[in-house]
Image 1 (cartoon, rainbow, N blue to C red):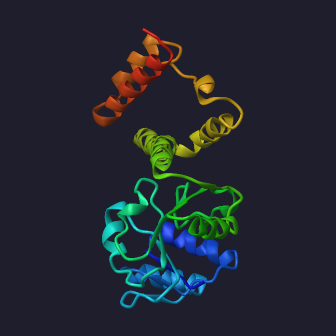
Image 2 (tube, rainbow, N blue to C red; image 1 turned 45 degrees about the vertical axis):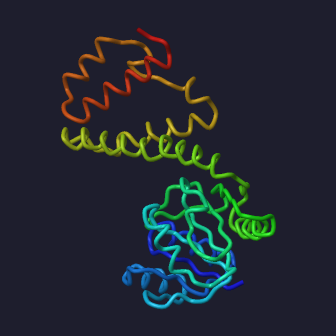
Image 3 (cartoon, rainbow, N blue to C red; image 1 turned 60 degrees about the vertical axis):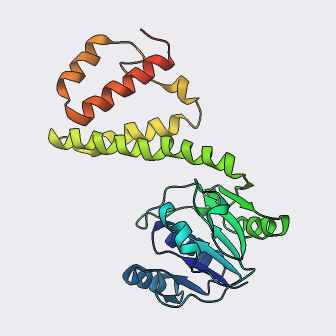
Amino acid sequence: MQTVIIGSGNVAYHLAKAFVQNGISLAQIFGRNENELQKISSELNIPFSTEKLEDADLYFICVSDNSVEDVSKIISKKNSLVAHTSGSLPKEVLVGEYRKSSFYPLQTFSKSKDLDYTKIPFFVEAENTEDQKILIDLASKISENVMESTHEKRKYIHLTAVFACNFVNHLFSRAKEISDAQKIPFDYFLPLIDETVQKIHEIEPKSAQTGPAVRNDKRVLELHEQLLQDESLEIYKTMNQSIKKMYQLP
């Protein structure tokens, strides 16, 4: 099966790498950013182009959600199978005379960070059982954790991921701003971060909550608020209010 990846960002890179590492050949990686495509091509030995999209049986669209619909219009091969990798978009966003599907890997991707692809959950949706099987079989060559999923369910999977990953990482960034401002090495906090994440492998997150808000320690909360300003102060207040509400504290 001739397979093409469209995109040159983090998801495109890692999906291409996962395919190559598991013996799945790629006919081409296609996109606009020639420098990034060249890097991926050189590392993974995949032909690339910024001009001519190869005819293929299967296309993966790995671009930002805002670009998926427009990019899908460049695929002209009728009856090919086309999958986007978005967590939030329906397969119907794809525009063309081909079979539409989605192929969503639930992970945060950065080109500079290696991943164990076998642990990544993949959520697959297609228009018919035959295409569903094609995508499930393909994902199963990469991952031990492959599931069918409707768009309705996938929307909530993606929303949960934003809370569990994107928001948490933003808090890490804000925390580093505070430590940097006080010339405190952020490395000091890595064991705490690691233990926080490891703990929820064994304990429900709600049961694992610690800190001044869940203790309703007003003196510490007020002290911290005096040390903060602007966005960080608003985040601090909002988070503590949410914690208090969850634990029904005054």
